[in-house]
Image (cartoon, rainbow, N blue to C red):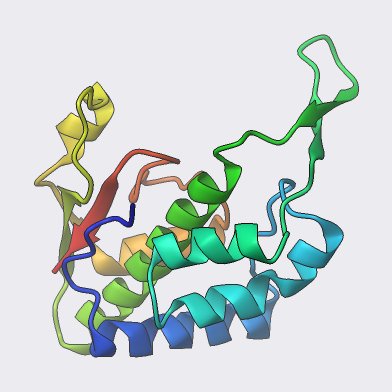
Length: 175
């Protein structure tokens, strides 16, 4: 089920497309180890296509197009690596996380262009057992320039500011 992106409209989608162009120009795409080599190759164009849709559409396309690997390399706690099975939730986690990050970047770019300065964190998906760190951040305002810089600088799941939060948090931002 897709997150409820409160400001996902044609204007925000335009800025999301500009963020895709930024990633193309800077080879800045996050290519998950859960993707096959073909999936990693197709990821930029699939993420670009997803702008016209949402994270639920992206998840379905990852599955339909067979872009997930069966196994991925994982570091062992004792050192070295091992092959681990890709989780059954990988498509949903990847789609939600990366679409949400792209949406956040596009929204921040839009806010800046419109002369605004801040964005607000909100819960974009209901949660029966919300994480305390998620609850603590809801309603807080962040500087849009800081968020977009953070997300561009830290492709993937971890960002320095933690907005949006990590996989499956259900947290996003709004104007």
